Amino acid sequence: MIRRLRHTAWLLTLFVTQALASWQETVPGAQIIGAGEFKVFGFEVYNARLWSAARPLSPDRPFALELIYQRSISRDDLVQASVDEIKRLSGATVSAGQLAGWQVQMQQSFVDVQAGTRITGVYLPGQGARFFVGQQLQHEVKDPQFARAFFDIWLDPRTRNPELRQQLLGTAKP
Image 1: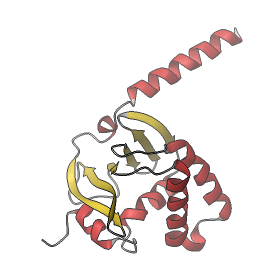
Image 2 (image 1 turned 120 degrees about the vertical axis):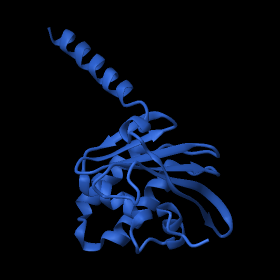
Image 3 (image 1 turned 45 degrees about the vertical axis):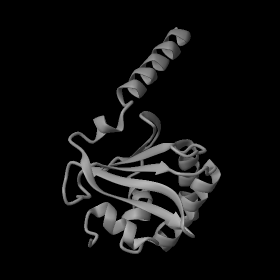
C-alpha cells in the first residue's frame, strides 16, 4: 500500500512538473514590456526582458523576468549576488533566518550558467515565484515576500542599475 502511494505521489509530481513546463503558460498573453543589458566594467553579463500581459507592469498581475546570460557564472555567485541585493534593499524588514531560508530556495532555483543559458523568474502575486531554466520548471518558491524581495533587485527604484530598470519597465528615454 505504501509503495503504491509513493508511486502515485511520484506520478502526480511528474504530471504537475510537466503541466508547468513553460513559463509562458503561467503568464498568459505575455508580451515584452521592455529589455536591456546588464554590464559590469563594460563586460556584458546578461540580457534581460520583462514580460507581462499588463502594461504598465502591475504588482497584482503575474510577470516574467527573463535573463539570458552572456558569460559563465556559478550558481553560488548568482545566489550570493541575489542575497546581497535583497539584504541591501530590504534592510531590517527581512530577518537573518528568512534570508538563510531564501538562500536555500535560490540554490534550488538557479544553476551554473554559461553563455546562452536562459533563466526566467515568474512573479505570482500572493503566491511566490517560479524559476525556469530554458523552458523547464527548475523550482517554485511559495513565499510572496521572497518573490517581492527578489524581483525588487531589478524593479525597485533603489536598484543598483536604474537605467536597466527603466528599460525593463519601458520608460527609458531614447
